Length: 427
Length: 148
Image (cartoon, rainbow over all chains, first blue to last red; front, side, top):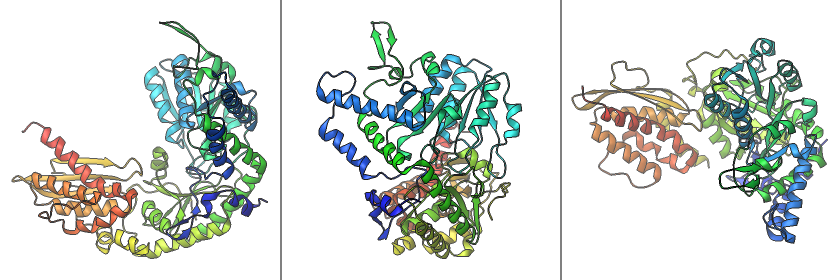
């Protein structure tokens, strides 16, 4: 059991009020709040040892370089990467995927090659592949989803062809909460000679990751969704792939030698970190990782499972409610619940919830193809983290009831979509 | 906060959302313009039929929140009977209303005045503005077409 009361004490923002009511923050899939340990690390860096890294010969530069590189080691340990050399810091998960898509794709993809994605991808694991397919003449194929919001794995065998060179798949859906069986996908893809890139933006904060057990070739996530600051992403990739790829961005730090018309590259991972990196935020991200390690990912996951099951049950009891994604009793589901209220648009629901101090997300969640698959324009979404409580779920339910009271039950005349919903779901 | 919510969702807005007299198709229209709000996925298509130098009939189709759909309905109603020049003035007046500056007083906003409460909810301004942004684009690309 987590000591949630004590944990909440570490997050200054959780004691603020919104529109006169205590904040209930349920938008953790978008970004999480930061504990004071992370906030203080930022301030300490700027107050005590701010310097550019890797090239200074003075004390401050040495201290900053050591702190920055220590977080690379810590990140490798956090996801059980074989070495720190396989960890590249980027701006966010999106940039990490773009880096890999460009640096690997431009070198190894040829016209007619195929990239296999799924219908449940966030735009960040879809659009970079559309761009690289266009640039290289490769084509895209898609693994469809079932009405329960799971991948149609039985189609994997037919979709994986000798032309498939790469599979890019989310570990956990930011809309449905579904956790995908990466190990199984990797095993099938490798058997066909394709490499696998995993978007772990939603899973890294909530599930203990072991990239060696997953067996994937590359994996990306963002610090800000796991108590860290914005502006830091991680790409973890097999060393031999990083060695074989050309750089993504050119500039300082990523070179070994430079002539007027040519250059040679620095060793990995620095080959992929052109220019001054986000030193302060990487260092503060180390505090976020320490915080999560101290509490334990397994404990956090168990707490979220309990909250999700409770929230699902309470949400199901609301009239006119549709819930998306696998039932919470399932093992393969995380703490993200998307929902719609009959006749009410998620934006209108979100505005009334905000008036009650409850922060949720409303919209397409950067997953427009998935929204079309669900037959909706948008959904409302509540997502949980280690500091959320059952009382907060109760506040969510109360706020939903006030939204219904505010708009009146007669509002439900305009369907959200002309298309009938093939997605059964909900209760 | 509840007063602000009432201000945002005035009765007339909810009425337009529930029962719009202007929703539907208009195959004989000369201008068809579609737009999305990339942030939230709201979408709206306007159909404008021109005749005698005026906007004769307007219909819209869309998916989205109460604000975006009610704004479309009220805006469609306000456009009917206007010249394209007057329509442009109305668009400017709505932009001014959203920015909190005083719109041109000589322009009758009709029901659209009810949208003044939206500006207290900055994230929702885009919902309302979708309708006139779409029509503005439609009018512009129509004006660029060679006369037939």
